[in-house]
Length: 115
Length: 115
Picture 1 (cartoon, chains in turn orange, yellow):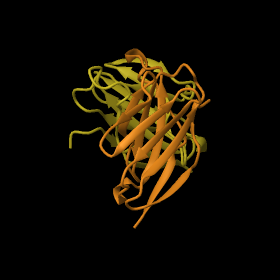
Picture 2 (picture 1 turned 120 degrees about the horizontal axis):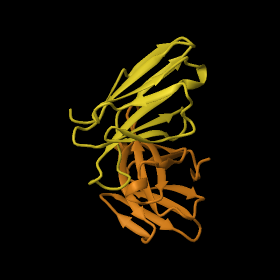
Picture 3 (picture 1 turned 45 degrees about the vertical axis):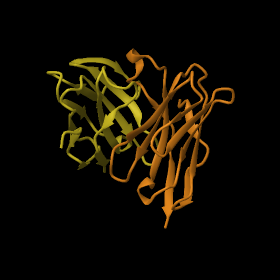
Picture 4 (picture 1 turned 90 degrees about the vertical axis):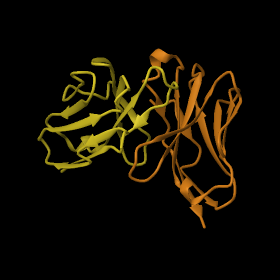
């Protein structure tokens, strides 16, 4: 079965506000986590990743937080824009180069940005 | 466009028919993946190639499914004797062993509808 999942299936955000998307995982052996974004009619697109030896990683307008104690992952999007409307998936794997082919995806959170 | 391309984008077939999907990965990528995605769910791993070798198949891949990557370039996914439960989006992705772990480049998918 799936080892990752998301707390909420949908999120509505006002343009310009910050978004927080949550994900819980159950496999305590997971040591590598990734967020993907999927726009309507397109394949998933890599956003940002984090290893289990980190608790925070920042990208352009995005931040991923990892709390290994409670096995929780979050994606924060700053100043949400209409182009951020999409389905967001967290995914995990064992983290080794040999095993990176087998990502396990959660069910996804649909983010809708209100103008 | 130098991304991952999939063909056809949409396929409607009758139960019992065979279908074949093609994937052309990013040319310098040696790894190729097939995932399946049903409505409202995250992608599920089906199979993985490194060059022309198929290194792993998911239990989701019944014996009606076969995937090939004959010359380590494009890949085909064939489904024989299709069933209504096969209706899904079939996603192909590629990556490079020299790239970021877990960063898969997905195509836009081939949507299968079995009547």
